[in-house]
Length: 267
Image (cartoon, rainbow, N blue to C red; front, side, top):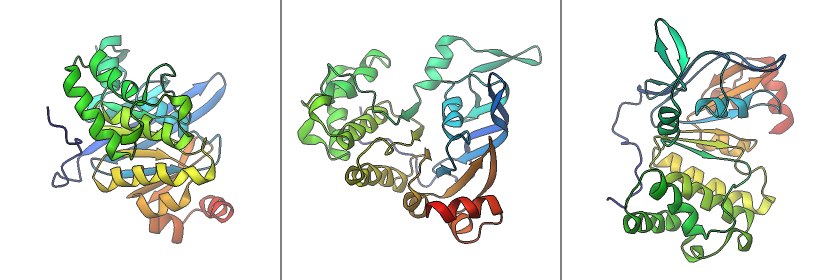
């Protein structure tokens, strides 16, 4: 097995869609959280989603890998329907095995690190490739050590989560997600649970992944990261995408008054 981190080929066409949603609707009871969202991410793009709390950002991420079931619309990842399949002209929920297979190709980094408390950093990283992908243990360990070095945690492979700072735990969580060789990485406010002085070390890893061509969607309140790293910025409010474009367009020449009002308070 190749120990190099598997990033998208930068020579591949940037016009190929990795993610596409069509008229996406998600409700929690009477509350419409996503209201007809059309969203796309090209292969190799770093897309940052910004907006006020409660605008639907995290729910959008959770729907992309079927952690939340949608109420209407469609989601495609790399051209394949997520969570459902066509049957007699209508959508029916896919099998658990197919959903799990799809989900294994999407890395998800949560606000809280969700590491196994009883396992070391190295053990956290190797668990899924061995148990889910059935890869040889010695090869998985070798790759895990490459990933620990990548996130600046080589000296912590035998440390348990309670001995790591929040920033260190989040970097292990990123390495754990990368260990599955994902085609897409999702970051849900990956720095929001961190002390301010620890935010930079996690953003540095995310920035490196973006520079290497990893397809990624990041929900974040870090406007500097959105401005400097994103290829595309999406602003959400009240369950809808209000405006989207390049960082320059959104931060310096936004056309929507709601976007401008939001940025005036956070930038």
